[in-house]
Length: 452
Image 1: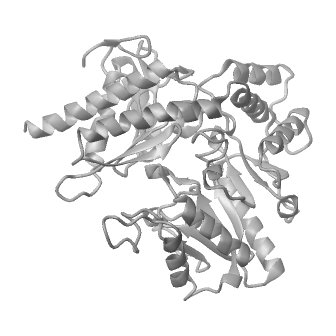
Image 2: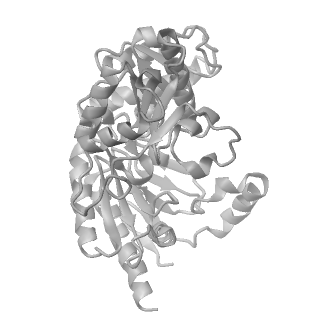
Image 3: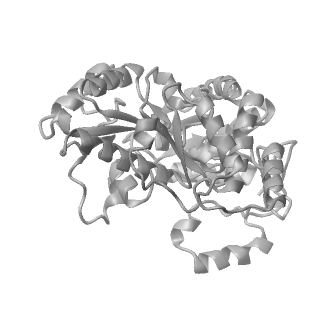
């Protein structure tokens, strides 16, 4: 590989470096294969928008550790808050009260929509989904014993535990489940390529698509038996957002039928899309928000935020590690940083740079880049085979591998999309340089195909 040295990235050895191969082999020996599907970069430390190994290599991070480090890796204020908590010392207190948890829940509610006035802290995003599912059904059964139905979307991702998988709409990931919940229903995602109502090239999904989906759904379930609708604020695999008219019609139907609206903001929340919460793009009011990932910029913490009468509906709500004091300290410092450094506005501003540059790249590869999708600092290029227009997973893998060789790190989606989501703190110069590396890699890989 060619050596690289700029202000933002550095490649000075083969990848993986010889001295890391033994450690990678050791993990492959003792861990499941699923833990080694990503690129062979052995992280040693990470700071801001950069990832370092022990061999002198440095990458621009274009994935934020799977959309976690919104305030950047190892932000000084977050590190300081963690260190202060360790000096006390206090690293666990079950769900006995703590000063830092009190401050955090107050901060979360202050930042949340006005009608959402209660929060329950957990550990992972999947836990938040499971909790929201439980609450919505307990609430529904109080109204009508049969009101336990759940609506979600085909292609949606809500977590990897049993209930979260069943709410999710990825059928391949659910093949091992013996008995699927007959009261969980999935409707088409409103994107012309995926929507069964899109008959022509000029079709634009919106209000009518939702009406058509509900007409089909209500042939097998009564609206009065639906407890909630789970909405992934954007479909993560492709950075696909809903048309606003679709969500407005959904809200109208849900209110008419006394159905809870639950937004999954686990990947989308805390500034990622240029809004504090991505559902704000749709100008609707949720009943429950599921949060995680970017809530702490690094440590495992999640939350559900909702109306107090909903959060209080189940007296068994508690969690062994939910509200962990070290995680709470990190989350509080993270939320304060997002506010003080105007990272929501920064994501919106930098998103215009990203969008413009990605559309420019698409113009040179129209037969390969079918869609540019996203908002703020989450975007995806949908890469297809020219002959079939099916998403080209193998080509995407080759492109992101080439980016790694040049000093830009991205994740494998396994869906034929190149997904981009740097920390919201990334400097403009580094953002532009990372995009330039992506463009170089796309050009090199596609041109090498033509020369075969």
